[in-house]
Length: 77
Image (cartoon, rainbow, N blue to C red; front, side):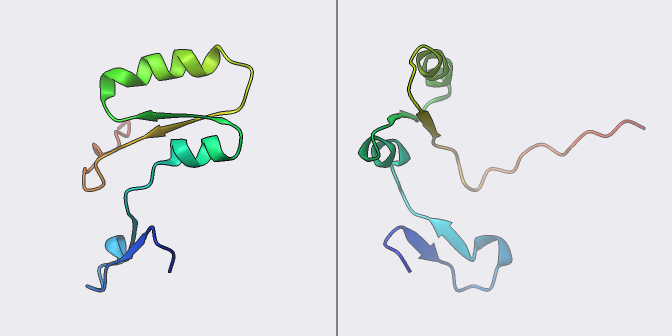
């Protein structure tokens, strides 16, 4: 296993493999692209605006809460 992969041996299918703290924006920079790391919700819009103003490949690395459950999907009746 690589240094960024954390294995959960509890047998829980959802938690078998989780990535550790990886700064994808820094990895992107190493490939000659532009990497922007977003750690707070209010920083997302400026990151998107900035990404759309350059003429280079951009990766926006958005840090999220791994244990957060999204809202249930709404389906019309």
